[in-house]
Amino acid sequence: MSKSLYETLGVSESASADEIKKAYRKLARKYHPDINKDESAVDKFKEINAAYEVLSDEQKKAQYDQYGDQMFGGQNFHDFASSQGGGVDLDEILRQMFGGGGAGGFGGAQGGFGGFGGGFGGPDLDMQARISIPFMVSVTGGKHNVTANGQSFDIKIPAGIKSGETMRVRGKGKQYQGQAGDLLIQVEVSNSDEYERKGDNLYKTFDVPLKEALFGGKIAIETPEKEVSLKVPQNTKNGQKFRLKGKGVPDRKTAMKGDLYLVANVVLPDVDSLDSELKEMLEEKL
Image (cartoon, rainbow, N blue to C red; front, side):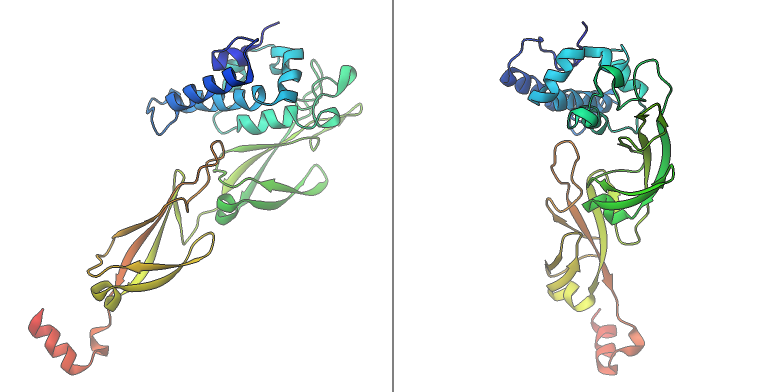
């Protein structure tokens, strides 16, 4: 029986938990998109994380050892992953396939692999849907109500999700002979007037009064987590960036957060509102 998840991590089927972890860390460092700029590294990194998601969990590993690549329709894992498309979250698909056992995982001898269309050779019971979520929900996570196939229910949106990613909700697809397919939801993230997202980093422009820009001071700024008091130094320039480490968007695979960059927008006063003596002095000295 073919078991290509082990090949993905470059270990044997008899590898110990420590050997699997060591192999995963080595490959994760090698193919991490921040280190490896090859376009193919992104998909490879996803496959590595998804394989480790299964093989690092005792129960999931036992299930995979029993069924092998039959779970992927007889394909090896690489071909299965490629066929899912670039926007699909492999981790989420595998979590849904293995999660919980019983009705939450394999459906038994009669039900087959319920997470993928209700069994081998049966009709495709999966359904497609699209949702649009607020920008801040994509950053911090939260709940979102979905109406599909005559049902209305809440789903959990994971923090860090991006536009174009697909979530799989088990058992919410079409039904046939006691089996239920899944609902595949493509997520679109609404734009924000306040933040710009670049990878896992966030950028936000904030106003700096001329006095604070010249002489320094503290400015209260709202961030996704809470309000912070930012100390701006003397001679702050327009467009100057201030980095808040670890205050950006969480990476869904590593759980590490990106950074929040605050971009200064120096606000000049209306000249006509200035005291006449101050105005004259400025005209003379500047």
